[in-house]
Every structure is written in structure tokens, then in C-alpha cells.
Image (cartoon, rainbow over all chains, first blue to last red; front, side, top):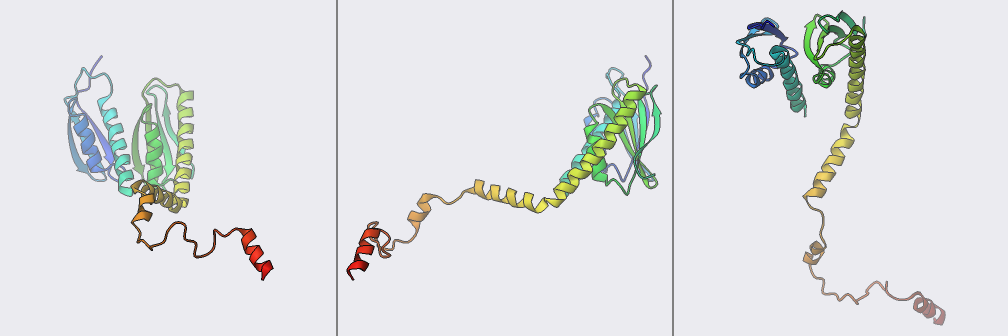
Length: 79
Length: 146
């Protein structure tokens, strides 16, 4: 089984909050290193040094966390 | 096309992309629906012009039929969340009133001791200035005698 050591993902800035993405990166900091940059309408997230021992898709889980954090923050902001 | 539709479906990678009209579904409805699916799918939201794109990838293996069913469930969830939002908005005032009443009640209501603290008017409990304690027969008798 091969392990991808470097991946990147783009999250649309109107749909993902910056702080929510940062929080998700902090959550997964033990399993990979994250670099978040602005790239036009997107946050470009570079994911490096993904722990090969992790059972699961770190990047996909990171995206789920970023989405959950954004949904939570938007809800709190509204209330 | 107004309603959501499957943009892409690939059973090999257990992925599917749904496309939704931005005008029909507010962002918070999209978030709420997506949130429900986080435990069984990897969800990535995107925008393509006037449409939202929802990329879903099953956490387990999914057949084409299962992926199609999941897209239907997502659309149902969107409608459920949209209705929920509408109901909450319509009943916002009632919800706020009930909540404030509950908080006021929990903060402490009127206690019997509060009446004791009120000013003493110098009256005994047997005093009956309004004649409330006078039996009906006595009142009637008086009238008849007069």
C-alpha cells in the first residue's frame, strides 16, 4: 500500500471560514503539517508529512472538520 | 435546472457530486444538511458560478445504487432543513417569549414570605371590614326584619 505524503485541497472562501479551517489544522497537527494560503476565491491548504501510520484519510477528515467548524461558528454567530 | 441534480457519480471511487441552485438553498440550510452526512461521508463544498457543488465520498464502499440513494437522502435533508429554518423563523417570537418566561421562573418567583414583608395595616385576621365573613342567612334575616 502506497502512502501519499503530500496533498493539497482548495476550500472556497465563501463556504469555509478561515478560523474554522485553522482550527481543523490544529486538530490534525499531530498527523500532518498544514499550510493555509489565500488563492483567489479559495483557501489553498497544503498538507505535508502525513503520518503513514494513520488509519484513514487525513485530508478528507480535515475537510470534514473544517466544514463542521464552519457550520458551528456560523450557527453561534447567528444566535 | 432549479432542483439539485447529480453532476457526477463514480462507484469506483465511491464519489458523487451534487449541484444545487444557490437561490433555492440558503447557505445555512446547506451546512445543516452537510453536517448530517459527516459521519458516513467525506463532504466538500464548493461553488461554481450560481450553483453550489457538494462533493460526497462514502467512508465505506458504496455501490451505484447506494450512491444514488445517498444523493436522494441529501436532497431530502436539504428540504427538511429548509422547512425547519422556516418554522423556527415563523415561531421566533413565541420561542423567545417561552424561553424568557422559563428563565424568569428559574430566577425566582414570588414567595409567601414576600407578603409578610409588605407593610402591616394593623388589622387582625378576624377583622372583616367588607363583611365577607357574614353568613348569607344573617344578611337575609336583617333585610327581612327591616
